[in-house]
Length: 364
Image (cartoon, rainbow, N blue to C red; front, side, top):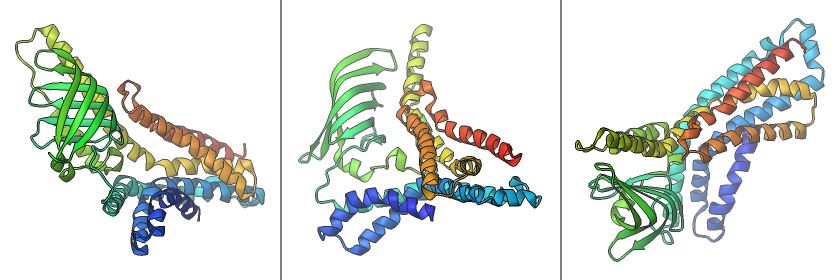
């Protein structure tokens, strides 16, 4: 029941914002709306499964303790650990289900949903470079990465000009679609370019053109919508694309400086992929951590009211996902190891839950 409630609540945002207006305006049939909602369900289960498990655990054991059933169980010679063993096994089974949803079903359904919505809004849509996605143009000369794309206003742009063996980075940019020539004009402001063969540096405004037809045909999902295997392939492809040959006429000091600069740039681009890979795996263990900490907290709270359990669950969920959001916010700062930050709430919740559970089992 808790999973169903959280699924419904998480679906409301997308349904009210994107699907319901299309249905009310008569642009789509109810069958299409049902298909869109069905595609969203596995995606929201990424969050609904751990939240539902935590809330159910708090409600069950809060009532269990408030009705003095724990005292009766202990008087019968049954330990708390023996009593909760089936629940711990259930949480591990849900971890396996969460892994399947997080790493495969959720991203694929999200991509299918985006394609469905794109087809429905095709009449008013315009071609744009997707955010946080590496795009290789038609001639294979440019590898483009855009951190943010807000209606053509770009931020954090990186372009690898493979033929010239150089890297161009710009904090700001602008996207302009030339429909007549079927190209995307990418204007980079205050850009800095580095040639990897001799270490030369240039700066200024740069124009990069991307073939529009190729962008449409080869458009790939965002990193957040990729499956685990797609993220791993993206990591390998990026590693291969960034393996630039270095000139042999460089001095040892120049060669070392160029290698250090290339290593830093490679880390800057590979860290977002690494964060998404670790986040998918870390999410899969959330059910177990929430169960470990939910059982002793429910016993300690000693309340049968449903609102108390839900309030505690929401507080713990906020703490858990704050670490995940922090890791995602630092995905362009490899020096902070953001891929390890997303694991921190699992370790904290499991460690604290194990200690509280041990104390609860001893009646402390």
